[in-house]
Structure formats: C-alpha cells, structure tokens
Length: 169
Image (cartoon, rainbow, N blue to C red; front, side, top):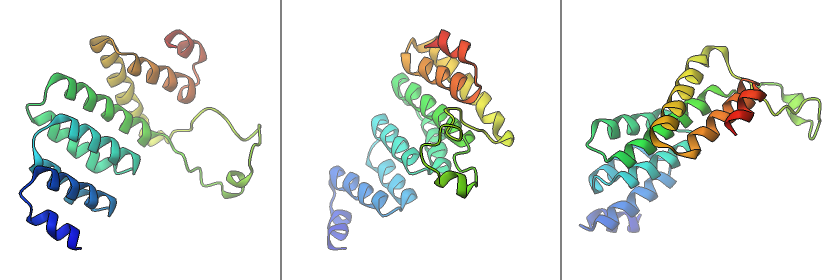
C-alpha cells in the first residue's frame, strides 16, 4: 500500500504506468485502463493492454478499449493492430472450450476423443462471420501474413475445410 500511495502522489508518467500495471495484477482492470488513459495517448500502450485483457479473458473491457481506440485519432498501425485483436476476441468468444463433459475431459491422450477441430456454439456463429470478415479484410488491405494464418486456422479447426485451409497455408 505504501508503494501505491507513493506512486499516486508522484507526478511521473512512469509512476502512473507502473500503478496501472499493479492495478491490473490485482484484477482492477477498469482502474488500470483509466490510469493508462491518463498516462498518454500512445497506441502501443493500448494495444499491449488489449492483449493483456485477452490473456485474462476480459473480452468485454477489451472491446471497450478497442472502441475507444477507434474513436481516437490513432495512427494507421495502431488501428490495424486493434482491428486484428478484435477479430481474435471474436474468434475466442465463439470457440466453446468447455464442453461440460467432465468425465471425458479427464481422460488424457485419447485419440478418439481428442479432435483438432473446435466446437462452436451455434448462437455465436455471427462472431465467426465477423472474425472471418475482419481477417479477410486485413489480409487484403495490409498484406500481412498473420490474418492469412488465422483464416487458415479457422477454416481448418472450426469449419473443417482442409482444402480451403491448405490453400491459405
């Protein structure tokens, strides 16, 4: 607490950034975001923050930060990164990782039950379409390899389209 108090009283931008990281570690994600926002308007900090939110599965706040970046005057590189992260969020939201089959999930290394294909919730198929649209748009407009790879992964692991995935790989 003494450290946090000292950092709050400091006028240093680095102290604010460090305080933001402490708040994040303590799962005060919104407070962390507020501190980053008060730090400065640097797109890299927002991109790193969104990536951290995705790691801890705070998708709703990550989408809010992305929306705020879209509404700001961010540079083209930051916009491309945040659009890519938005597609990743949609992809993660649509994959149903917990099938609720506790007995089956406890069986390790069973070739019959371990499928490389992900199951998606039918209610979330809209997210799949959004993710595909974003990755495809980034692939065409940015000439980056990463969106192409994610499209191939979706085709193979989610849609089960080996031929389409093979073409993209």
